[in-house]
Length: 613
Image (cartoon, rainbow, N blue to C red; front, side):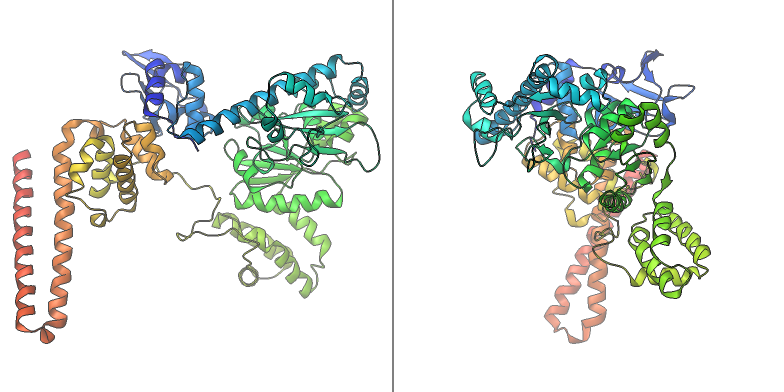
């Protein structure tokens, strides 16, 4: 992952104001000399009175309604559901700033190679599309699309194309455009074992784009009808393309997904995606020649809290549904299943009866629990003791991966009523049937991996002295080298303060000066959000808080001294009989010194308090 330089970050901040960035997403109004907006993070942006304050001078925003705070990079991260690096890239394009990364010669070469591959894919996608619309040879592709009921609007929306049958055409075309043999070999457009034979010839082409619209690779549908030729081929993984991390149609569905009002719909194939979009269901996407993956669930979880499944009605499609349910449920997302009537898949219904019939067939869904209960009750005899046990075992992976205890209790209550057995016996069977392969793994804190954590709102009044000190130093990092002589990592008891302390250490060693880059060094999301919030609060950002920092440092030191004295006292009580006179004298002398230091520090803190009053 590239690390962008301070100069890049600062150049973006110099060319853009916080208000300009916000204005690109939501309306901004001026009131009492300050810019405000209706908060997009709570209430759906429907506040009666704007509570979202924008500070152009310092480059931060703060909502007085929900407590959200941050800078322009944080804002884009949250609005577009992207990483910090992606937010930097978005704002750099908006500001017209060239990205500069902290990297060596090899990394620069890798970046140049990646940019070239993106350019190549975009160029050839446009050429394929032109050939589909204008080439005489592509008439078979146009006729095929017509027979499948695909409209001209969808051909344009998905930029469908045609790869010529001439096996020499692609290599000759791209070579003339100046692409090197090395780049062509890495592009995924040619057979890895028979270069320069093309991966796609006489095929209907489906460009695969990232959520940002970058051209990653292709999927091609055979039009020859020859036996022993795979119907679909997909670009192999390349430096810019990974099938398990991307989805066909994510770019075309993004506007719908970002509204947050619809669930994402997972279908099986490219034509199913296009058919659903043609029917008006524009949140449809599909995996790329692989089973639905946890990485694809994570990608969609940026935008939605619910994922719907609409796989083929055959046995393979049903198996895919069961596996996908588990992945979605383990990620803490809602899952619903659509059963299509009138055809094996979406594209078949569109082809036979048109978009309206497809939309009607799509309406109505059952949640994952209902779906599994219905399927399991047909598979097992739930009227026999053994059948009931097998039925509960079948549902156990789903129930075990339920993040919410309340939700799980509701499911168990329903099963108890259906099976006429006690809830306790169902819980016992679920516990006994626990399998590492079937349930979400827990980390050492007991949190299910992939689950959606409940966001903790930052409360300045409830901040420990440890966290106060670290938040203040995060705002004034030039002071850290001085105060680390007074506060060590081991002195801190607050786990979040410890996380920030380590980030401060790393920032000092790497000479990181910008707030944005500093935030990327904080690994814990909660701590990162609290630091971002502190940047907008005078209590931490003002230099007048130095005396409060000194007091916090003294109190942390005092606590450490008192703990060391308590340990020494316990040792004296426990081992005084076994200590020789010299050892006893040394221990008593250490206690005396600690008592004096503690007394002196307490008096200093008392004088400071009286002086302030």
